[in-house]
Image 1 (cartoon, rainbow, N blue to C red):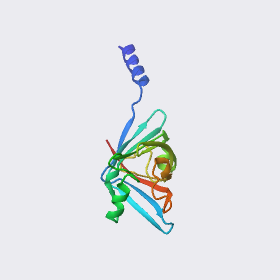
Image 2 (cartoon, rainbow, N blue to C red; image 1 turned 45 degrees about the horizontal axis):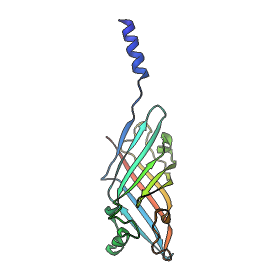
Image 3 (tube, rainbow, N blue to C red; image 1 turned 180 degrees about the horizontal axis):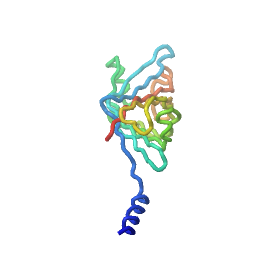
Image 4 (tube, one colour; image 1 turned 120 degrees about the vertical axis):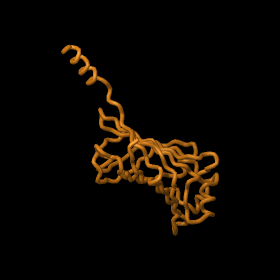
Length: 184
């Protein structure tokens, strides 16, 4: 009997540790963008529909962030500007209803202490490598439920085939996410 218990204990210790999942709270999370217009003003918008998850792998203490943003969930001050950014020359929401971000594995300490987050951004059917900066927060790494992860980055819109109004609109677009985590 003692050998059987020892064998079970060894099997349990050798079993692969499963990944923990945290969900992005779609109600409290958002994504924002801003771009300079005529070098005088800034066009801003906020996406209300963002969802996804953060998968934490315990053996190597890393996490992977996956976020999906519905392009037609954009909120802007001007209805005319909203129609324009959803049109084919910008987000082309009819043909590309979603923006996706998938990070490379991130050390857990970066989720709380801040640092760079590298990954792939897919927009308008084009996938490019991107780097975001994650801000530090007061959350303990062992308990991220309820935490807010803030990511900021700059992308070049021409990398994603957004070439309209290049004389009036900057190619540099600020993109940010405020992701509220919850247990799945």
